[in-house]
Length: 317
Image 1 (cartoon, helix red, strand yellow):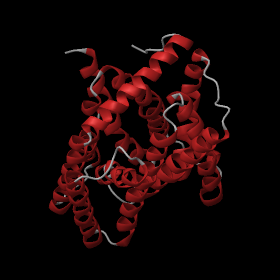
Image 2 (cartoon, helix red, strand yellow):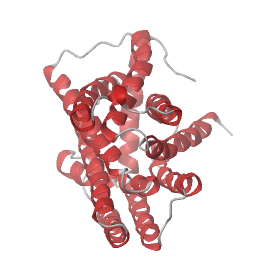
Image 3 (tube, one colour):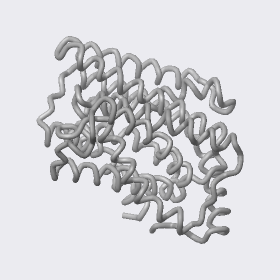
Image 4 (spheres, helix red, strand yellow):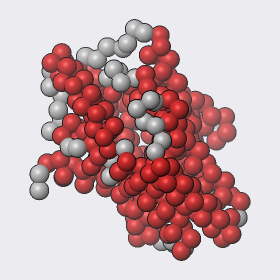
């Protein structure tokens, strides 16, 4: 088995397992504080990479505003909603609902990116995904009441927020170093998370940080965020981008299976059918968007080559 396939399998397993560890950590630590702490640790683990590569901050005010704004959308809004919502629903369901991310991205991209207009196949994928969301929502309201329904709504809104940020980056931020972009985004998004956490949840030093909660925090920060980021961009350089996108289809399935095995989460037929519709919708979008993504991958690859020539080869493998 060649190296890109091994990295693909590793990244799928890591990102599929993050939903399990979010759920485990939320047993002891409230959501906003837990999310903020994750990104503080992640920034500490990514900082040496920036120092080694000597990446400089962009001087353009528009670039800085883009990084700060998308940081709020991605890390404050999206992750804040994910952590808050997963208090009330299963980890597998949260992963399935957040899997709507590319569907929202497709709709938003239609209005922002000229090269990514809606097609009938893409539209069919969006409609299928929306039907799946509706079926999942109906199950949550019928079985567990309004708390789980609002938790599900929060996860979908998180996917919408993250998708909007992603489209903005594609539109205006293709020239920004990916590691620097992620660091600035995390810094911008983590501060509001911690502020909201202190106001609504109390002093984080007074929480009971159990060994399991600390392990979950470290796993999410080091593996789910820092290592996951490095693996993804390495993979895009060494594998067809359409194959890397299949991770979007695999991670919800891994999350569902881990939730069933380790947390005794149940999977009703409504959630199973709704989840299958969401995954099928994503599959249609991924398949239809292959050509555009291949062009973008070529652009990113050329950018990294120029960066390697300037800062030295930073390939972690």
